[in-house]
Image (cartoon, rainbow, N blue to C red; front, top):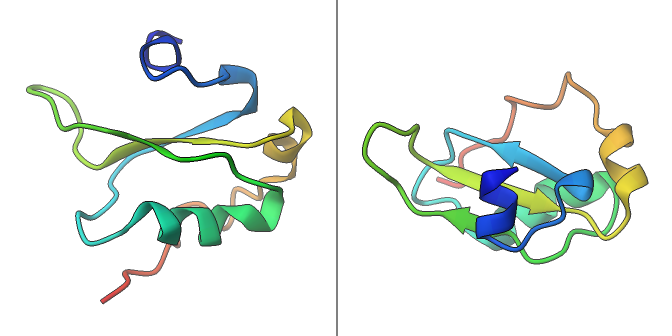
Length: 81
């Protein structure tokens, strides 16, 4: 929840994502995750020492959207290149 507070994101409506390539835009992430519901602006988390790279918080407008996420699609985000 520290990241949610730091980036002013509602943790109940959010998904924490790691391993996002630098070439992937916030718009790419929104298009991919909005299949579950309307996405608020994505909070890209700057790379920090001793932390995984390519992190973001995907915040949905409605907390019910996070319950629609299929675990099978996670990890299958196609590279935009």
